[in-house]
Length: 238
Image (cartoon, rainbow, N blue to C red):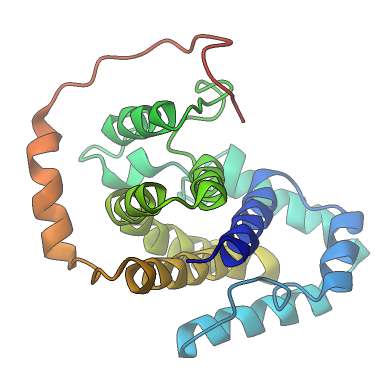
């Protein structure tokens, strides 16, 4: 993967992270319309599912106006703050047998971030396995863009984000009140899927099957993870 493409994809990941990170404002909506989001993304849609997600997001932005800001804020809160839609943005809830927060996935990702010189600013407020932090890790790995970084990124997508993001996206799509949030998860998943395909092509390695990924993870599931305290200043934080 050439550096220019990697940088463009890193900007994509950061843009998607920002949309999941905070409530939408009228200014943000205007800015998204101005740049023609999502057609301004570096990774263009390939395949019917991706094309539909891009089209629905463009339509959602075209339909969103100032009176909907309160509805967007309510959707944001129900997804990312209160859990009212039962669609947690944290991986542990989807992959833990008891659907609990701050479980094995969080500690595994904490180790991955630490190896990259990163740390969550405050895991109690936003756990390491939160969608936003996983997207920011993608951006970080793409900006470095060395072969080892891309190999690790491919594995992280397989073993973490792509295992639960489709379920998150589907549930939000079914329960959100606004078209924007109904499609944002789908768009994010479609983008991540295409990124993984691009990594497979760039690295010359076929994507593993779901069964191969689950088999790879099995030995790790019985390891007890000891809680780690966040140490300010130990590493850059988001």
